[in-house]
Length: 194
Image 1 (cartoon, rainbow, N blue to C red):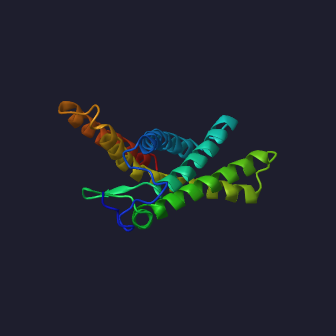
Image 2 (image 1 turned 135 degrees about the vertical axis):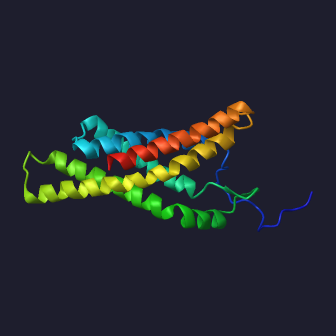
Image 3 (image 1 turned 90 degrees about the vertical axis):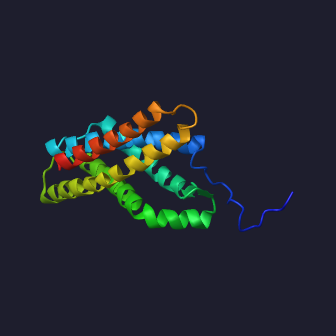
């Protein structure tokens, strides 16, 4: 057996893009992205005040997206047909493609959660400061719209992971069409509600 050159060895603790962990993360991401695409325009359009349950779910989603961001930094990717699992190359790829969007959305989630908790502890006062916080909170929610850009990528990743198992011929074509339908639906819904 030949020894692998140290430059060619995959980095430790990296996730395979088609592995079970990445596939579960991608499926959950799609579910939560669709939730954001439906819930966010509803809240912004009718200025709905979230209940305690929705606030708790929002905090859970913020934790999920923060964890997902770190998982993406440690998940390999395909460069053409070559699987890239070197941490430095994976990080470089992530920084170039998704880091800014992920940082904006995760930070907006946490700031939004902070504002919602801060406003819920106020005793019904509608001071000038509270009105400014409410406006800033709405602007921070708009940053979450950027996540819709990930729907297509996540659906593509899930399709690659299960393509060998279930998707052949007609089913593969139907899955591909379904990918685009879900992506277009989410994008249209968010744009129409803004």
